[in-house]
Length: 473
Image (cartoon, rainbow, N blue to C red):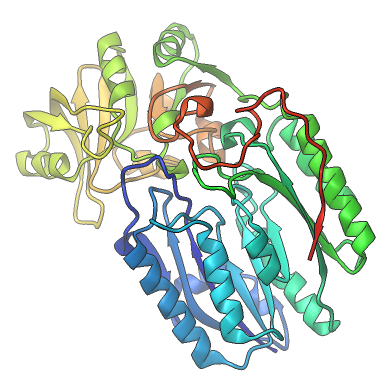
């Protein structure tokens, strides 16, 4: 069997002023060793020829520039065209990409692939559970499966499942039936984590719906809420041989998710920035981690909003690490000044002027990490160690702090631009809070200027009634 692998994956916040450009994508082409890291399970599939076309992945951000998307799409199609004929195509996607001037970018991309390869090959896609699924996507895909964990610890497992389903269908000569239920429900990922209830029980229900070939797979998509386009919402999907069985499975999962709509909540105390800082200063355990959630770059936030940092400086904590502010000019000035130098800097507040302003402060250069694509500096301002990075950077791993001379466990407070804590951060925290801070991915979604989503939709229309309508493909 000849299987091609391709995909364009990113998460696009339409409220972000920062465009996602071509250079923001990590491209994997034939022969790239990164291919093995993404798909370590391929040697386990015997009798299959796997061919890379192109995969492109970018950190979440603002809408993708149209020229960037056109270039990536054209290269994917060109490389796929050279691989024809194919038995199947696996699409490694995210599902929440927005392209400037275009709705449903994944629908456009998948439709183009279907037009290229023709009706015979099977198309299978893996999605992040924060992807927004459209009717167009359901029409052209044969198989779609999504993550079942948030934080996402099953990314590799989901890719493997999408390929396993594809090969299973090809070997059995089957094109599965598909059931799709759009759920008019839009909640941020920070409220719908699968690490606590009701998210845990809702996602545990997926496994109980599987029934051999009758229901081969099922998915609940939370959707990506910070996308102001008509397809934005949750959905339930089931695939298999039996149309009645998959329709019933998708309907049950949709009803279960909808029934718990008012039960979803943050897994930790979610407070104002000032309240989080006051609580953390009063706590007698350390480290305390605070999520600066409104400017979380891994949800599409710009990353340089200074509101939280400004409030923290006013509180004068004796021992705090702030991760981080992307500001290449400030990093360069720290490097030029040298270790232990004292200097006056203006940092942040440039990329997201709607929610922020630059901060002028004086500090000492405590650590420099240079000689890389993303040089970094640790600037000490009173009791706060501010991590400055040349590029937008998500601080998810303990080693990132160690690389800057910071022992996380020895700190009293660590503030990180994130939403729910990823596993390594959660393991470090003795206590944690979620700050309801401003930014492009503000948790107060009802206050955001949505204009194009389908209404009614919960929680924008809290008193709405709804019953699931199943579409079969």
